[in-house]
Image 1 (cartoon, rainbow, N blue to C red):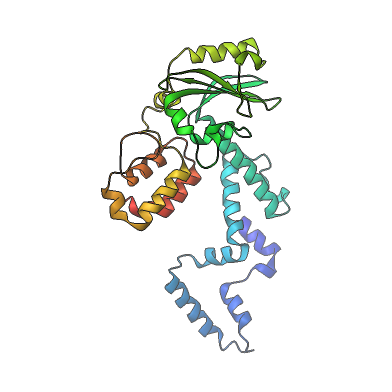
Image 2 (cartoon, one colour):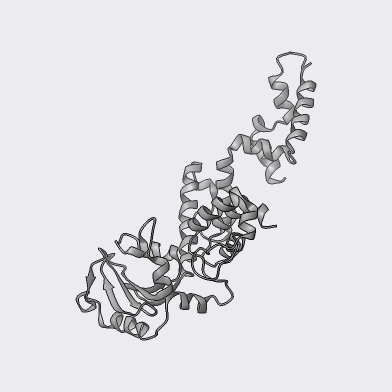
Length: 305
């Protein structure tokens, strides 16, 4: 006996057909309206282009959000991101959603790790070079650094002209930013979390961390130089998902021809190119999440054909 057959046997009150449901809403004892209801339903299915009526009714009964959650749960289970794989251990969809959120954090963390150049890590310190706007804002969160400000940010300038290093104390949460102007003709500067200019000797960094930082600063290359070396097959850097969405929505959403034909200053740095090329380039970036790609493809895919 299959699992479905066994469940039907265990829950006979739910083992019903679509016709059973239509007959239930027929107000007559002789079911003289049921055939009419069947014809109407079939015509509605045809008009709406529904391919799988069983699937659609199932989604209606369970709820679209819950069906999405269930599919995401299964994907994370297959990828071994969820420890409690037995769904019978959960009492509600809310508990499943919590596990999905935790699994998504694991995915996000792995994606972020691809967007940095890790110089050093032990139980106490993490020393890294952020290579994308997202990694810069995430690892630089809870600071007053100008590169992490919401809205207008200095990230693009520092990305292009400086080497920027973050030193994170994993135990205390303390963060230090260190920069060296490569093309900006500026020496080494150190900032605490409040964006105060401090001496590196006053930061209390242990000697081994100081050596890691010093060795990296001895190499004259910007964050963009490191990005280009790490991802040599990727096209030129595109700054952020938000920038792509906002500017692409403005130009493509209102006038496709303008976006295709006019040369527009790019988002990030590089030569001028069309917004369609920018969109394609951003979607190929290693730092772009699957969710972002899916959203952009759904919204703008028709323009990329």
